[in-house]
Structure formats: C-alpha cells, structure tokens
Length: 331
Image: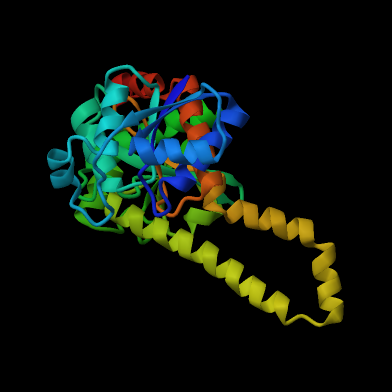
C-alpha cells in the first residue's frame, strides 16, 4: 500500500508531517510519497538519518496557505502539494491521500480531480467521536455548507458504510441533528430531510439534539457542513476546556488530594487519550472516488501517524465499494 502525504500541509509542516510519516513507516510498514519542497523534505529526512526505501519524494514548488480561497487557489496553484498529491491518487500512483493543510482546498481538489462516486452528489467530511456508549460518526463537518436534503440522505448511507467497513457495525442507527427531537421541529430544510430519511432504507431514529454528540444516541449523526463544523469546534473546545479545568483543580489539591491523583494517574492518562484528537488522526472525505483523509491544521506527529493508519484502513476495508453498494439500491 502506498499513501500520498502532503508534506507542506499544517501549522508545523514540513517537520512534524515528516516525523509522523517516519513513525507510520516504522509502525505500519507502509510506503509513503511525501509531496512538497524536495530540498526541505530531503534535508529533514537526512537529519532524521532515514536510510530506508519506504519513503519517496514528489516535488511540488507551491503551497496553498490556510488563509487562501480554496477554489481559486486550486485553480491557480496547479503545482501545489495538495493538487499534485490528489492527482497522484487519480493517476493510480498511490492508494490514498492525506493532508493537514487547507481543508477547503483539499475538498475542492478532490472533488474536481477525483470526482464523486456514482450516486453521490456532494462529498462530506466525517469525524469519529467518543461517546458514553462507544463512538459515533458525524457527517458533514465542513465540506458542504450549502447542502440539500438529498445530500444529507446520502451522508447517512456513507456514514453507515464507513462504520460497517472500519468498525464492523451492522444496521447502524442514523439521527438528524436538530434543535429538538420532535418531528415538527426545525427549518423547512430539516423537515424535508427528515421526510427523506424516514422513507429511506436507513435505520433512521429521528431527530437528535446536540447532547447526542456525546450521549451515543445513534451511530451516525447527519447534518449540513455549516452546523457540523460548529458542532466540531464545540466538541474540540469542550475537550480542551475540560482538560484545562481538571488540571487547574488538580494543581490546587491538598496533600491527600495529590495522593489520590497519583493513584488515579493511569485513569487520567486514559481520560486524556479519549479526548485527544491525535488518537483519531484524520477525518475521511467520504463520497469522492478515492481515499482522502483530512487532518487538523495543528496536527502533531502522532496525529499524522494515526491519519496515515486511518487512510490505510479505509483502503483495506474497501469503504468506497460499500458506499456504492449501499447508495445504488438504498435510496
């Protein structure tokens, strides 16, 4: 298996991205093509004393910065690390693409170059989140902010196919993110989406409120990209705030409290791990004809390594084939 990695994407690129790739090669024994400034990449590999043959470099002399317009930059910067990397997948020179760079640019490049799978109108970014009952998948969290009801219906099928392929979950339950659980709640857009989901072959349980993001009320939560991105930021902010609050109170603990902290050290480590985005690596862009994983801009080396793992898992599980099989007769 060969994973294409955007070496220039992310707040700490290319160093952290390369370190993550090195860790992935060591742990997963996968092949990686690093795309970006060849001189910088090779200099870092030399500094890391990498002498193996699992990592190769594809030069790209342009970078799409985080602040740039996605659609415009994809058209103008044809030799950017994102566009070059996506095209390598299109040409069959790699099995999957990962980037922690400009999310909009990755979505635009993937949609324009790879196109959507048969039966899919718009791709969606999915994230797996920890819940009180295990995990849930939320889709879309930012790829499509001007969604139609049909898109959300397709997200339901894609989300279930992903959970089936990666986590072996059968007959996944699907909920529609809304301001209330009652069928009458929400905008006309939400009500129309509700009707489509109700008539589909999905295991649709109805509307779910924001608390479902953590409660585990259903396996797949569907929403438009605008609402989903807000939900994602709330989840990230909540996780960070909880850890800060906990740390503050632990520092104020008395001697007996500090002894209790010492005894609970392993529990705190596990707690932090459950909330750490780096454990989940990256978010799949479901619906495009290829495997594309999007990472957080501030990803560290561990997050990069895990994102490469996630990319490999999606390829091996043939998630796209499962989506096609589900979407064609499903609707």
